[in-house]
Image (cartoon, rainbow, N blue to C red):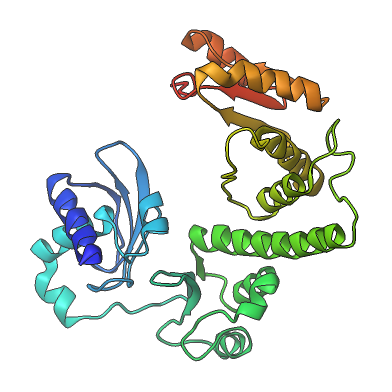
Length: 305
């Protein structure tokens, strides 16, 4: 019921906030559109059919909601149904180029969609890297750059949607992080401290595990009780990420009452530069334009526009 409710809400918002079409396909109602939302943002909307999971939008909501639609897709379908109802129902989208996009649902998969008349090279690539449903085999995620190169060689007009690249990069980074986490935790079990020398203080065993967890998981929440040293773990995590991923900036958003406590802890346990961001808008812009390694701000002063 919740899924149907979420879809219905997006359809209601689509009806209340019409889109401005900036670019439309030349071949008919099916194809790729460029649209501007009432907020002024521009998105790419690909209309392939009337059902869920057939279409694509470059907006953030489509990327994370796993509903197979968004208000921009629903707005386009609403408009197209009004003008091309018979065409939409009688004609299916004829894909002239191969495309790789994400298939959203209970799980997210990378899917190859074939053109109406695929070349032998496309068929060979599909058999090598994709299963019978057109989904990229999991063991080929690390070879995705090779898959893309082979696809471009087989079909120079193939469409690669941006969310695919971001998703595969994130999946590969997560797999790499989990592998590193297992290796570092194995060192702890052998009595070694893989976080030794990361900060100017030695971490307790649970703090070392927490810092490793946060640094290797991509997105994480440290939920230790108050007073157990979450700040130290966060600083160790930042240092581990600097060594592993080469990060150069850390933005800390915290209640105003603890910003100076963060600054004290950073100066005590690290050699990194630190800057508190506050004041009027011109000052904040100047501070963000000349960042330190750690930038400390509160929810209010985080806004720079």
